[in-house]
Amino acid sequence: MRVLSIAATALALLVMMSSSTDGARGRKGNRIAKGEWGGMHINLSVNDSSATIEYDCAHGEITGPLVVDRKGRFDLKGTHSREHGGPIRINEPDNGQPARYTGWTDGKRMTLTVTLPNRKESVGTFNLTLGGRGRVFKCR
Image (cartoon, rainbow, N blue to C red; front, side, top):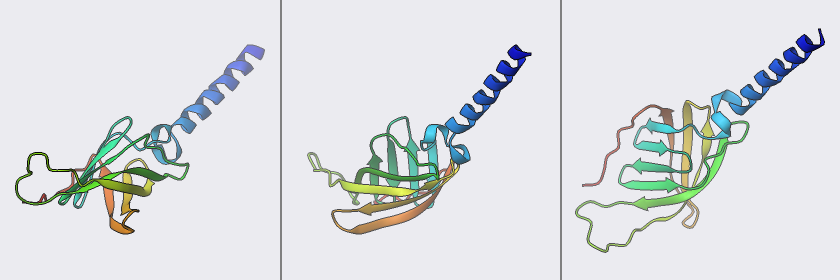
């Protein structure tokens, strides 16, 4: 009987641990899910330690671990670079500037707000879906 009780307790602990590592609402390890996220005028590609973003006439990068809190909220740092039409010149400096990426995810959907703190400017708020592919219009 004692062995059966110990086995049942161990099984219950394993079930609780596996559900807690998935995080609330399906986020694995309390990180933004890896993969391609898409929405209107934005594409976000998330890997293990960073993400790249393509917007209309701009691009960006989020650096560092892409962690979320227990409610799925995040506040991350990165860069944002405006693009322009026409050719890019040799040795043209990158106009990247610090950016703040805040929002919420449930592991399948995301709301992402991009701000430029040094300019006190909002780039916009975007709704994305994991596995989706947004339509982005690049400058010509």
